Image (cartoon, rainbow, N blue to C red; front, side):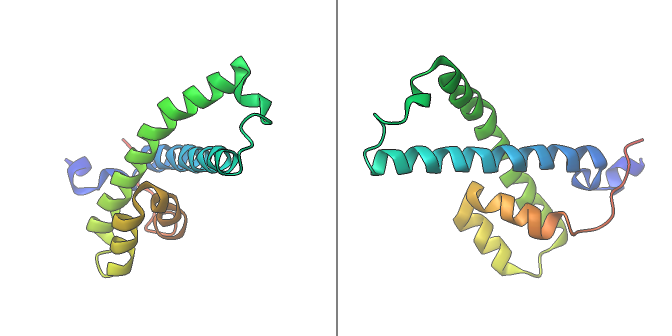
Amino acid sequence: MDGIATPWFATSRARRLFSISAFLSVSLILFILVFATAVFFNLVGTIRWTDTILGQIFGFLLGVIGAPAAVFLWVGMLWHWHARARTSLGWLFFLVVGNWLAAPLYYGFVFRQSATVTPIK
């Protein structure tokens, strides 16, 4: 029953999933920022990639895959904070207030620097 004593997020598989989720979350955030900037500056008509089928497929896939990945990363980083980094209430506040926007930062600055990886048996 070694798997019970080792937190799941410390395994190599979890780290890989969190890495992919962080990449997708950052991609989703950048996509939303670009689109929001275009809408804010009234440039929607000048950006033609949103009118193409490839642009719509990319946006759809990023939304369908990126949104659950962002939630998965956020919950995982909250779980990591609860199990390992409870001393830093600043990170908890940052994760709760920043929600899925703050999760990639926590992943980069805290989670990746944390304890060694435990391989799955």
